[in-house]
Image (cartoon, rainbow, N blue to C red; front, side, top):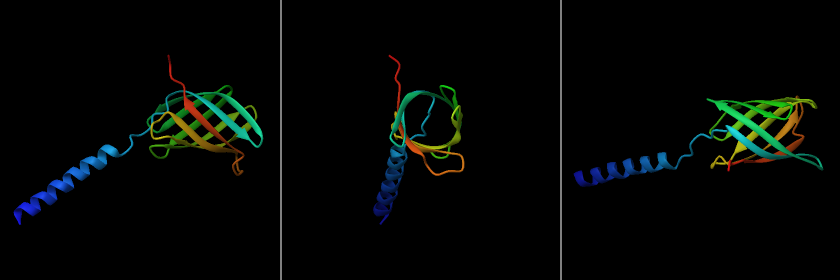
Length: 123
């Protein structure tokens, strides 16, 4: 009986360690990212630079500023403000932290488009 109890405790301990190793680490968005954004049939490309401190993410894409908050390990809710208006965006980072996708819209409106991005690696 003691042997069964010991084995049960050992299995539970090993399982707990395995689960903690498998869980994804929080994404750090800091760096340069290439992106494509759509608005209906219109496609635009560009580069955004993010700087993350804690849960706060500040980004710049040309004359557009992005102020975001990481609401989970891989999801960021943000507001953008630029020459063509202001609005919201929801960004979903991949578990690897090397790409993202999401949707955006103008303030007070439903989604107007989608975007994808890939981390730019320095050479």
